[in-house]
Length: 361
Image 1: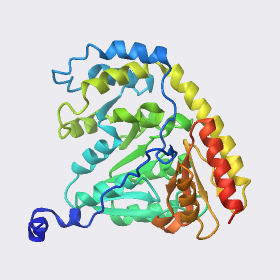
Image 2 (image 1 turned 90 degrees about the vertical axis):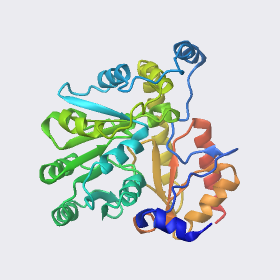
Image 3 (image 1 turned 180 degrees about the horizontal axis):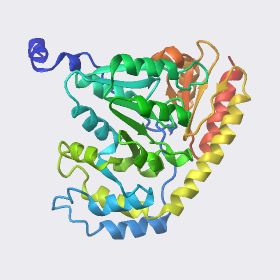
């Protein structure tokens, strides 16, 4: 390939990036991607199939997904003063938000945090600033955050609540303090809200610069690629101008609308995941050399003995279990691994195998 063609066509910001890699999980117990491990019972599947059999896939979908938007507003208790925008996953919404900013605008987030904030910001040529979390507790370093806000004047601040990959909830008052002094928008990313029992959705009318972003992926609908953001109607109106038409396909609209009206099923699954999360957390902390951090999400971050994370990760993979190795990222994540809560039998297999590996170190 003519390298001059590549360098002349693509912006330097793109050339400098590395593509986001997704691990291959074929024939492995998949505990790396924070998915709900449960599918639907047969009676729910049959009712769903009846819903989608007449979906007019020869026609463009409702460009505003009005029925689905209403269901999302109702089931998530979105304040009537607020509006929502739907996206092809939260990733598209992050992209929309950052595409709307002036050139060279500053974007800020704590670190470690969700990788797509940085990935999208850099791809668009924006200035990306991160502020390290407090060591061990992974709480916001509020003085450092406030100083960084003052210095960089970011037009968008991302705060994942709970945070990925650390799984903790930041202090509510810290987020309120940031909302009070932020010069632009503050995006509270509540991807893991089903497991957290905490939300800023009811605070939307109090802060005109607050936007709350959510996804149905962690609830158990990751294959649909559906996210949404709620906030001031005037802000959502501007974002809608650059949202591509028909971005939510008709199968997603029908399926998500059906699924969200079966809340009891998701609540049962969520309760089971939270129960199993407590069991796995306690079991991890009982292992020698392991420190597991409290979690408000459907995954657990844990630290291994020094320089053992990659060895343990590879050992689990050899035994058919895929988790996430975060240690190569360095910094606060050195020697850290992340495991998604699976079905009880998957959790047992993970813990048994992990124990064997550690005992043989």
